[in-house]
Structure formats: structure tokens, C-alpha cells
Length: 267
Ligand code: ATP
Image (cartoon, rainbow, N blue to C red; front, side):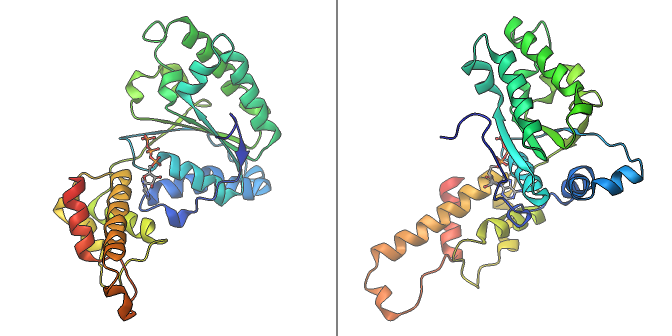
């Protein structure tokens, strides 16, 4: 696995993200164009937030968007997992926080992504105890140093914003809150299309219709990814178990029947 704080421009493109158009617009304004046209932003004296909190149910694309934003902006991406940071450096997590921000500054433009950020920022005096408290204080110091960290953008992600200390949600910290909801029926179709780009889906399959189907109600992006993967697996098994049929020259694709079987399996 990659070392902590490994930075690179991610290879997730906006085409890999289904739906979430409003979020894309927000991030274009707040990050992508600002990295691409810094002089213009400066000339117009626009002062915008550099810290964001993505919140909402699991598996709806928080990590994916953050990576796509970095890719689009040509920025480096540092992925920090909250619980890991907390547990791996017992007694040294404050130093780890300082190191992470300093690394982000040296590889700017950079997106610093804190996954499960709630674990680092639980309300003081509650769950975490003094380890979390000291770490949180260090994090606040770093976040408040935003002036010195030009072109470092901080994005946190959480499924439980309600447990977070209010202090971290102030402007200049994780100041801009963005909700990442479960997909609508149309968005489910768009997510399936995004996920299908690298799979041999038969031309007869209507992914928008599958997305709108009631059997897909309440599925997250991660669930839809599991669905399409299961459909692909089912199609592959069909191919591998019927060697006689494959000799007629028709190519094997993922068809409606595979999606139907996959839906039964995952639901
Ligand atoms: P968690 O809160 O569990 O960390 P998350 O919101 O960060 O979840 P992601 O890790 O971004 O979710 O999504 C998990 C996977 O689900 C993605 O790698 C992708 O395959 C699929 N997925 C989720 N949302 C989308 C989407 N909007 N478009 C395309 N794929 C998606």
C-alpha cells in the first residue's frame, strides 16, 4: 500500500462521476478555476473559502468527487484517513498533522482530503478524550494558517457531521458545507452510465431505465457499482460455462438478463 500522505494527481475524471452537477459547479468556482486562473481571482479581489466539508450517506461519491476535482485542476491529492491518523501515530499525531500540512504546501496546488474527518474532530470533552483533543487543536492551528498555504485546499468527508465540534465548521476551517445526497432515479441512471464506460454493455441495455426502476430505489453509488459488477460477473460466467455457444462468433456482452439476475442477488 502507499505510504501515508502520498501525493499525485488522481486519475479519476469528471466522466467517472455520475450526477452531482451542483457540486461540480461549486467546486469549479471555488477550486478548479481558482487554481487555473489565480491572477483573475486576485484582480477581482474575490475572497473565497478554501475549506470544505462533504457530508451525507456512505457510498455516494464524496471521495470520488474530491479526486475528480484534483484531476480537473491538475492538482496533487493527499488522502488522509481520519481513524488511521489517530491510531497509527499514538502520541505523535500532532506531529503527523503538522507534517501533512507541510507536505501539502510543498506540493501545491494540492487538495488535502480528510476521509472520516469526524473521527478527528469529535466534540471536545466527548468520545475522544485528550488524544483527539490535542490533535484537534493542532488541526485548528493548521487550518487557521490558511493565509500561508496558498493553493492548498482542504476537503473533509463524513457520514456523521452531527458529532463534529462546531469550531471546525467555522469559515476558514471546514467552512463550506456541501451535502452529497443519495442519487435521484435519473442520477442512478447517470451513475450506471459512468460506471459502464469500461464494461462491454450490450447496446440493447437501457441504463437510464434500469436506474429509474423501483428495484433500484435507495441504492447508493457504491451499491450501483456492486450491481454492475455483479451483472458483469454473471455475464462472464455465462460466457465461460457455455464454450459451445461462443464458437458462433458473436461477442459476449452484458445484457438485461444479467442485470435482472444481479439485482435479485444484491437485494
Ligand atoms: P464513504 O462515506 O463510505 O467513504 P463516499 O461517499 O466517499 O463513501 P465513494 O468512496 O466516493 O463514496 O464511492 C464509493 C464507490 O461507489 C466509488 O468508487 C464508485 O465506484 C461508486 N460511486 C459512488 N458514487 C458515485 C457517483 N456519483 N458516480 C459514479 N460512481 C459512484
